[in-house]
Image (cartoon, rainbow, N blue to C red; front, side):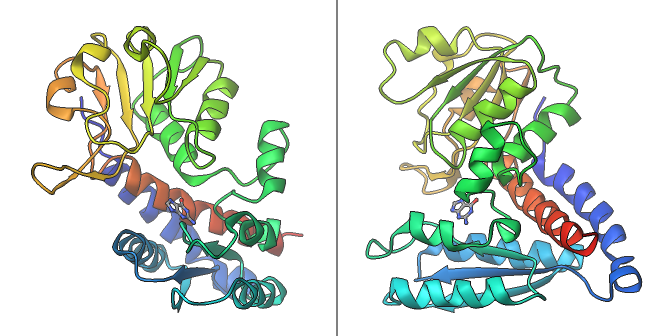
Amino acid sequence: MIISGKELALKLKQEMAGEVKTFPAKYGRVPHLVVILVGEDAGSISYVKGKAKASEEVGIKNTTIRKPETISEEELLQIIADLNADDTVDGILVQLPLPRHINEDRVIEAIDKSKDVDGFHPGNVAALWQKQPCVLPCTPKGIIKMLRTAGVEIEGKNAVVVGRSNIVGLPVAKLLLDANATVTITHSRTKDLGEVTRRAEILVVAIGRPKFVTPDMVSDGTVVIDVGVNRDPETGKLCGDVDFAGIEPKASIITPVPGGVGPMTICCLMENTIECFLRKMEK
Ligand code: GUN
């Protein structure tokens, strides 16, 4: 079975749109998400457009601020400080990666924790690992929603995560652990990776390399979540981290690329923006 993140995201966005429609009467306005894009990276431009389009679908106000590659860290921090102080802004997202002369950690830390819709602020990361209320990072949150919607029982399962990034690998491992899976975190330098992945009942791959996971690395009946967004070096088309054609016949459930995890990430960004808005309005 192929899980369409696109279809699930569409349904969830429609539900959110219905909720957002009630906000002007209740709170006097709709949520406002500000996305900052530095430079001209084609991937980042496309992601930011997707975020603006989803905002429109849900009825969230979106402002995209575009700045040239040459912007100084100081200028960027000033923009963030102004947005932090602006009461009409509920969510702030700085699209990553940033140019090398800008310290990403400093930028992420500068965003007010209560407006950190990505869930990347150290305060939110710490809260996640300490089981405190927090903004959940969008991709891991979207993955858990897809698993639950597909009826996958997580509790007691052997879950293997390939990748250990702050954005996906580590937080998705934590969410699976909180759902009572037994979790193994692996990476590109794990010895005999296939030995480990073959034992997975749920396999989440976020390594960023086309066809990194081959059919021999996956056992029959595995639930395969592919977080990769790569270009196939042969066809130039978008592809994931797993060899989809080879693994789909073995997997009990698999997510496609495109149309799998990606749309769910953006959907959860919308949900996080609404959450930050409501937390402020209901204070
Ligand atoms: N770059 C790749 N994924 C993400 C994301 O989820 N958030 C931000 N801000 N940048 C990204």
